[in-house]
Image 1 (cartoon, rainbow, N blue to C red):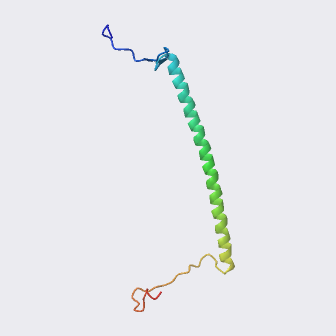
Image 2: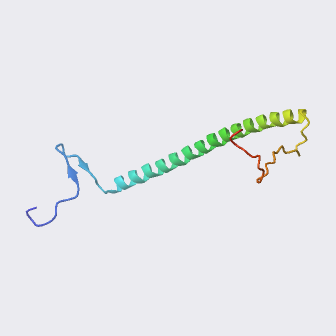
Image 3: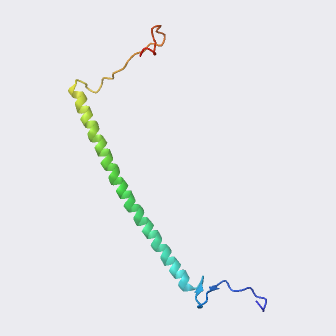
Length: 101
């Protein structure tokens, strides 16, 4: 400017509206908006956590119910829960030809 001082940091538009003020009202408004944003984010995270917990409980219950039915069906065929069905394949068998299978 003409007196050697740097221009002010405030931006003025044609109608004289000042933007970017650092007065007490601007600081108070920024603090209030920040607090509101933090509270809203905390509430959203709590709601999302509750929804995800509910969905996880439903999925775990569904899987448990299906496994319960499978265990009941296995018991109907004489499985007492201690039997493991395995197939023994010897490594050195000369008749081991996997192409025939």
